[in-house]
Every structure is written in structure tokens, then in C-alpha cells.
Image (cartoon, rainbow, N blue to C red; front, side):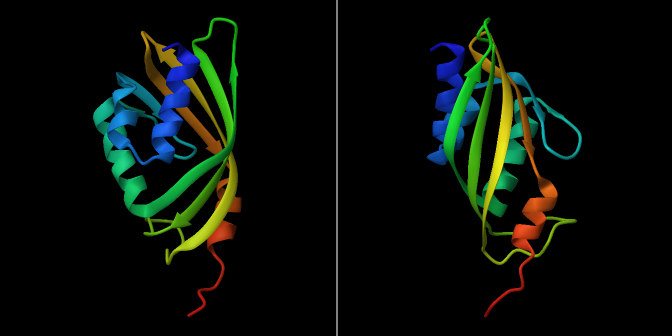
Length: 137
């Protein structure tokens, strides 16, 4: 698999909720740079992050467009996050199954056939606005 195919498989695994498949494509020393907060270094920290994400959000990515640079080791991807907010996190609004649709992008680097960096960007204030609608019983 080339670097682009590795990243495409990573996101296919994400959409299929194949967390083990995602993790298998990551370098042991992966650097995860989230939209907010400090970077996480290492597959153990990424695994813990993935578990929280799975508990709190149900997401599918659509409208994916992949870009590569000449060496093929860096890939970027633009996509739309179609999600449901299942469980609230500290400092974020209450969760009660709110749906959201949010544009986002990620930048990845592949080293020795494994994803060694994942940097994700999205508009957090927009997401907060989308999930802050009053609850209708």
C-alpha cells in the first residue's frame, strides 16, 4: 500500500467503526494533534482518545477529497463530519443525541508505511452552536 492508500484505508476503517483496523495503520510513536489541546504522542494515548470519541460521538465522514504532495508522504483530506453527540465531555455542551454536520480537514504524514502524524482542524465554535440547540422532549 502506498501512503495515499494507507490514509484512505484509515478513513475507510473510521467510517466502518473498525478501530483495530485504524490502530493497525498507525506508527507506534504517532503524533496526534487535535483541533484543541495538547498533542498526544504514542499509540496508547491515541487508543484512549479513540475510546472517548467512540463513547461520545457517532460520526461518518462524507465528501472526502484527498491531496498529496510530490514525495507522497504527506496527505491532506477535506471532508464533512456527519455526527451525533452521544455523551457530553467536560467543558462542552450537554449531550442528548444532537445531530451535526460540520466541515473539517486533516493532515497526515506516513513514515515507513504507517501513519506517523494526524492533525485535525474544524470550527469548534460552529460545532458548539450546532449542538447547543434546546432539547425538545
